[in-house]
Image 1: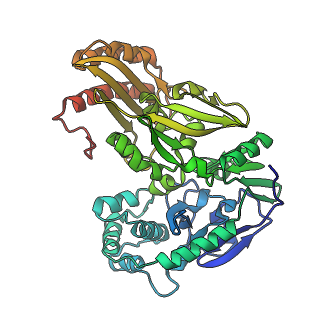
Image 2 (image 1 turned 90 degrees about the horizontal axis):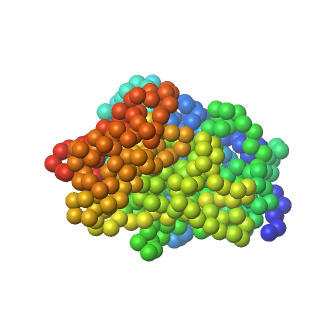
Length: 484
């Protein structure tokens, strides 16, 4: 592969074409908007994608002559990610007079100190455009990634409902023109941006990605930057070479084959939700607990696995289902059981220049049951203290196979082999639960940390087994929302 000479970042900002060159690739979109473009409506609150004050709307071609719109956190997006895309900020909505959401926020007294207001406005605007705020619960889900320090959520929800009742404009013709413009700005092949001692590579297909990573095995892979962004904003790390996988078409596919769901590594949590919910409702519910809407719009399934966090939410659920991970290095491809990918804290079975291409998640047979639940301090936008997932295979009323996986209980996502053995050969009853719960103390010795104590984690893990038994028996409400 031949890398073209470095090119500037070309994108559209609030309807006007822009060009960026000479800045460090780790410059955040938020800092560029505020410090260079002087668009100060976009705020910095947490600088980690948690509070939503920095929310902007990102637009890109959807491949069908239209536009894909998603709200993202500008504080953890890097400026090279703007290339061939468009950004709208809160200032764009006020160009021709107040937008319907701005008017609704005023009329319902939904703005108090006002600091968080632009982020709420942009998030509700995005939800409206995407048809995602049709009722009260969906409005609440939409703003799960926005925090109001004045606790004015009631009026904000009412403002969202007013916007939901506003008819959508017909933008098909304009969208097609913008999509064509963005595609022209993006160009073909590998986008290469160099500035201030940093290099950003953005391939368009998996072969170019393999070549780029082979040439730069020291590079940091970036998809949604929902984790890597914090390396810069919180840890102040220098990242000389980054490879953006978010545009690799081969990694953005979701396919069903042989009874399994193949999810490309660059598929976002948002885009995976419907397919995973169809595989099992508990997986769809798990996506709702995944950070906030802006993180789900940017973060990827592959990224959640590849970073190897012991509290990543997908690995325990997928391990319980018997998932396999697909990887590639140069021209060589391989796959392995997902549970074998995690070797130790911070270590995965991945060679230099090797990257995740997809995760293969098997479906369930009629004689199998799956259970999954996440425990965290908050329902929305929080990190797991414990996540448990269990797949049982039955012959009549007898368990003939059990796969029980946990996150937050060890240095890696891990199966509870002793508890599994205690369940096999028994009915899924209180006696089996007692034996499996006792075995958990041998399977895990959890750590104490700021999220939970060791004793709490072990108690919760045992209690989740009882929860799963109650769900299996039916008749007992165990969740805020029904996912059965």
